[in-house]
Amino acid sequence: MSVGHKSTLIVFLKARVDGDMEPIAFPLDLVELDSMSAAHIKEQIMGCLLKNGFTVELLREILIGFCSDGASVMLGVKSGVGKLLQDDLQASYYGTALITDWSLLLTRHWM
Image 1: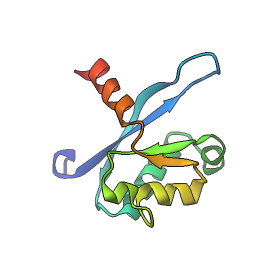
Image 2: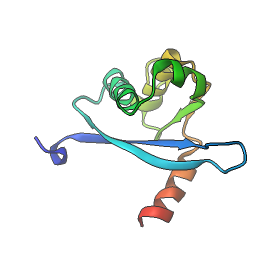
Image 3: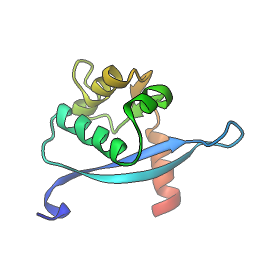
Image 4: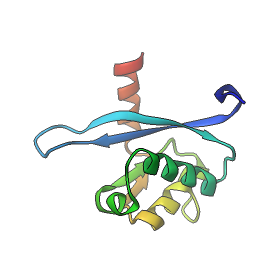
């Protein structure tokens, strides 16, 4: 089945190499979703990060937060993707506050 028939998720990272530069946001990968459940989406995101060279230990050390479009499956306070990632990785923040930055990134680089 082609990507055109499945739900997908673009995993973006926002990072900086040293303390002197501004953080940059960039797309890391396109993830296919077989299910829209929070548990499945979280597993796909973790699989993407692990496939791209991150380890759980490194993510626990460097991950500051998670942001999404605000859909309830992503941000549900008891079992949303953000909460599941926060529980697994001890991330300090999850929410929608960085969406403005993401929208600006799309405007600047792809439109």
